[in-house]
Image (cartoon, rainbow, N blue to C red; front, side, top):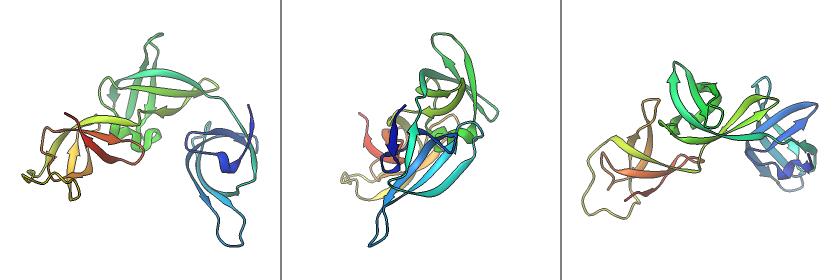
Length: 191
């Protein structure tokens, strides 16, 4: 455990604040004119799952906590719960879809993820930064447009039935693409 200032808090940072354990979902540094530098953060209480959006002084100090990270593999969807399996112990862990947030869109059969544990409880699912998915529904592409500047909607595969992202006009049904899971944006076509 180390003491850091709020300015050093990034998405995924786990820390203690007022005796409670939190993980950062989103952080943004702001400094305007004569005002003090502040951090706008969206944090989740690790034990109650309560999500809080708040503003702290950039110089406020917090104590980081270490989360136990274990590699897990997605097994199946059980109603609203995603079931992951530890490859070593074969222990299965259920995570409600609501706890995954946007990460639920990127889950497909067999995907390898890292699960973070705090005091024996699964508190965070970390998926790869880039994932490859197949376009399952979109309008036909336009021949000759390879610039990638014009975009159209496309539905890509996931265990939740798919989700929409914006892709270049040259992408057709069946095209495999790489997606940045942090922003949900198209990166490139996979050959």
